[in-house]
Image (cartoon, rainbow, N blue to C red):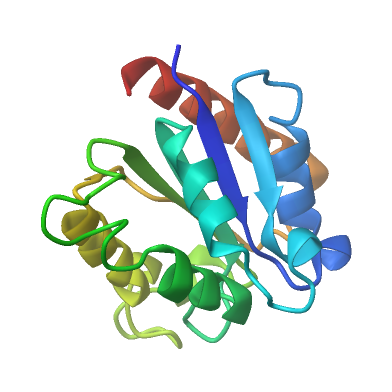
Length: 178
């Protein structure tokens, strides 16, 4: 079976009901490592060689974060800019992430119906994150269909539990397929 690294970025993890529940649903999996960027780098001083070495050890890279003003949290952006550098993630003969799977997991505070043409957010959530498709392409990674959880703060416990079970099942399926 393959191994997965969850690169998790949430600046206020202690207040995130949805992300806490998702991560708790997979933390017992032996082939899954949760790497909390805000816990490891609270001052944004990223150890680039360590991060690159970590990425090389896994077959599936999961990037998980909340939606912050239609974007990723600041530390994840900094991580992406520094760690996925030329000569490591892309460049002449140096695509060290080539062939790995990339699964993006997004949590949004708003309901799903607000991410549609004519609604307040004007378009599907995935259209705000096309940079992940480009990242996968440049790095030679296999971009997998994103997982989106909406309204996590306000959804019922039963619905959140169903979503966590679905997230776990999807992760286990991807680990077998990669």
